[in-house]
Amino acid sequence: MDIFDIKDKVAVITGAGGILCSKIAIELANQGAKIALLDINLDNALEVAAEIKDNGGEALAIKTDVLNKESLKNARQEVLDKFGRVEILINGAGGNKKEATTSEEVDFFNLPQDAIKWVFNLNFLGTVLASQVFGEEIAANDKGSIINISSMAAISPLTKTIAYSAAKAAVSNFTQWLAVDLNQNFSENIRVNAIAPGFLLTTQNKYLLIDQETGEETERGKKIKNNTPMNRYGSPEELIGAVIWLASDASSFVNGSIIPIDGGFAAYSGV
Image 1 (cartoon, rainbow, N blue to C red):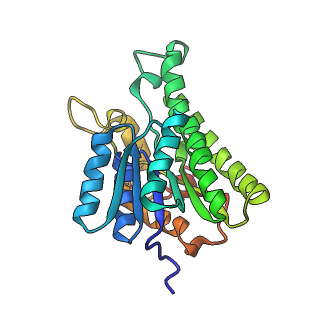
Image 2 (image 1 turned 60 degrees about the vertical axis):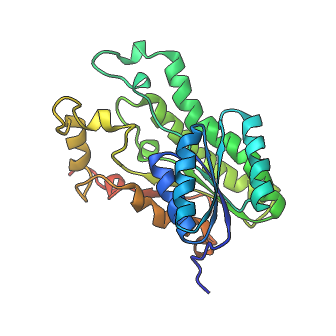
């Protein structure tokens, strides 16, 4: 038996239309999983669903606001109507925004409250609410895997990204808390883990790493590479192996863990 087998498992992915989770969704589908693509931007989710279907997979795109519990419950019902169950939840909705990031123009004392709140809520509260709604279904089935998306920023807060770093630290803490709670109060067959990506170049952080006028690497980008022993940014595809591992029986005794995928960033002291 292939312990990495996820064929016919039903996976719900929030933020599924984004750069990272779309890649994860497509590969899980290639491995035979049935994918529910939840995203507040339905067009993005539909594009991913179309690619999955074109490759012979099964996918359902649902417009979902992870900060609205009723929206999540409606999505859950659509998933159950289509696939009948939920076995994997990947909490991928998240990200940062420029307005919640300190800069030469806006220092810490003048960061707008709404921007900080938006980033923190999207990353943390969106993970909590989705885990409540879909975790309840997993608990009812007595088995499943929940995979959260943390960050290297959770281990050591990054300069400038106050709300994002704090939110990802909260996601890591919540991951451990939920792993214990679900085992002790619902089922010992449920696992909750997180991956903690290092630096991947995406549309959400490109403005910090690449100078928009010259196209050259910023000083921040240079520092990141200098402190990453592998001396490069990661790619979204390099998250997939760990996600399949955590979703499958290959990680059957892995629970409450935060898995770094960072090119050695966390291991390097700088000397």
